[in-house]
Image 1 (tube, rainbow, N blue to C red):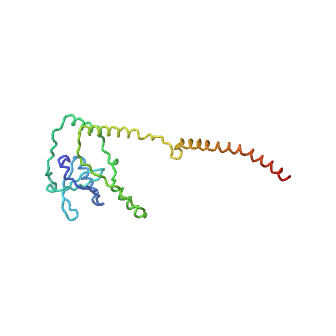
Image 2 (image 1 turned 90 degrees about the vertical axis):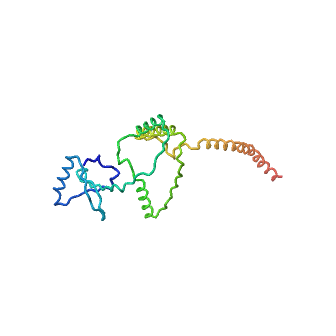
Image 3 (image 1 turned 30 degrees about the vertical axis):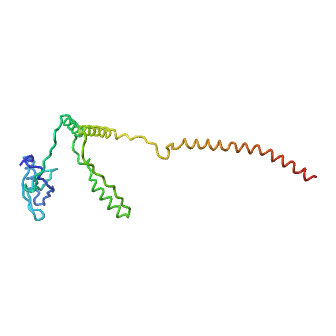
Length: 225
């Protein structure tokens, strides 16, 4: 059956199917038939002592089995969203935001932060390092006073993010920490003050020197008498 006739909510997990040596030819025939017909095969499969429905599809020359939930396992939403009056300007701004953020989907651009954090935590424990707790974020009330202004800020942020990513290949030139001319002005002022304070001391010493020499000349005269 065509893939667009299946509700995406039914899909669950995917498994690669690898044939045994004796089943290689039937495997290749089924794979080619699915590719030529551009269809999927609906099957039933028993996994972990439970029977489920599944589909067979071809991906990268390999047959993939994708399990599905039973229709009664999909919960029907039991709530309604009261949006109130939606202004045309708000719809236009929301559409502009979607267009600004639009792009091709690349799974490689997304990272599993939780898995990375767990790996780092385990590695830190094995090495005997200190584990630091991250501060918990405070949840806001979620109330938006001006929806139009909030949408405008989101559009501006998205545009600046795109422009920043486009120029991220040119790193900014920053001065190293040890070469920054930090606190040069206070040092110069201190040098001037110290020079000003030392100047009177030198003058006083110069004035006292002749007086000491004069005293030295008078001393032999007293001894002679």
